[in-house]
Length: 93
Image (tube, rainbow, N blue to C red; front, side, top):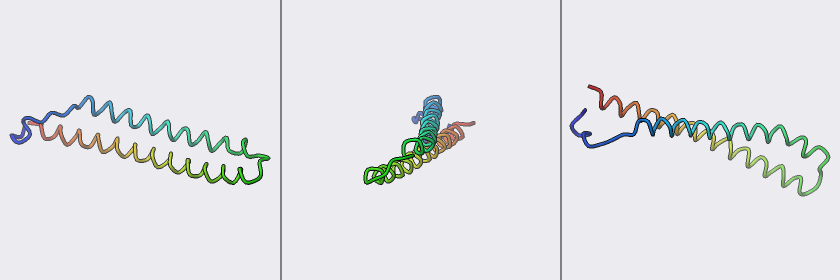
């Protein structure tokens, strides 16, 4: 273990569990977006008017936001795993 990191602790198990949970949450968001996309035609089949337009805009906003959040969670999971690998390498003999 390098001398300058002798007092630093890294929770490898906690990091791995957190990375797994981030991926599960991201997958849940991706699944939710998919379900919403499939349901839109059912909801909007014969719906017209101003509130339909509001629904269309809000649906697109939510779709984008959930997709982006899922992507960011996936990236964060990968970064956390990379940090764990880097920390493990620092402690390797």
